[in-house]
Every structure is written in C-alpha cells, then in structure tokens.
Length: 201
View (cartoon, rainbow, N blue to C red):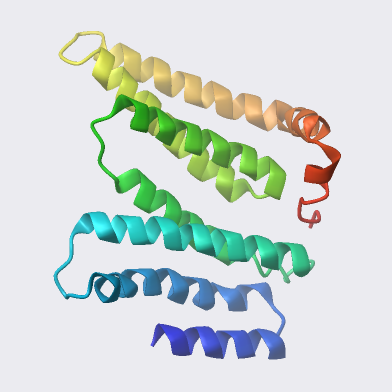
C-alpha cells in the first residue's frame, strides 16, 4: 500500500507540480520504514531495538534523498518539493535516535553533539525544521544532566527552572541575532562547502 502511494504520488507531482503533493509520499516512506522492520528481522516478532535502528537509518536515507531533491529542484512558492521529505526524515531519524537506550555517558554526549549538528545543518540547508529538532534534543540532554546532577536534591526544581529560563533566553537571542549568526557561520564555511548549499527559496 505504501509503495502504491509513493508511485501515485510521484505521478501526481509530475502532473501537478505542487509541493504539498509530496506530503503523502514522505508519510508513506516513513510508514514503510516501520513495515520493513519485520521483513528485515525475518519474523513478525521483533525487538524494539531493531525498529529504532531501522527508523534511524531510513530517516537518514530520506534526509539524503530530500537534499538531492532540494539541490535539483529548488522550486519557488508552493513548489518546495523537499520540505515534507526533510520533515518525515527528521521524525524517523531523530525519533529512532532519541528512543535508543544507553548507559554510556559518552553515548549520551554523542547524542547531544548530533543534535548540535542538526542546528548547524539548519543553517547549511536553510531549513528551520532541523533547528527545532536539534534544539529539542539539546534541551533533553541538558534536562538529563540537570536530573542526574541534582537527583534527590532540593535544588532539582531550581536547576530545571534555570534550564527553562536559559532555553527561553536562547530562543529570544536566536530570534534577534540569528541573521547575524547565520551570516557569520556561512562566512566561515569553505567556498566548496558553500556551493553545496541548496538555493535560497
């Protein structure tokens, strides 16, 4: 069913080149990642760890495909063919990554770095969706640190409050200074990397 949706959606995009037509395609691909898991496992009963891994890698593949679409067909108003692929790719990738369990502090810090990378990807790709998911992941890691450091302490509510205030302050700073920060990050990029950015819509 998902494959039929993708095929019909691709045909519809050729007939009606409108960006929203790609939404059911992206959703069907995301849903397909869940249906592929028991096929990969070779059984109807499978572990959740495998489902998370499939979601993560399938999400990465969707993000890569969306980048190719973004570069080849930048489109214009109403013709953003990559948006929904990016969105559902992020849901699959970030969801799978976030749901993975690990007792390693190094792995948890790696999770924080991946989310920080999503924030930088938002600048490179000119996509705010990456910023939203990256910020959520970074805030989740900071919340974990606050809980871990102040567990069973009367200071825990204070730590959570301070973290919340910092996130609000960061959001206000981003709104005010984001264009300047983005320009500085782009200026620091090597020329070859700047040429790989999708066109501004």
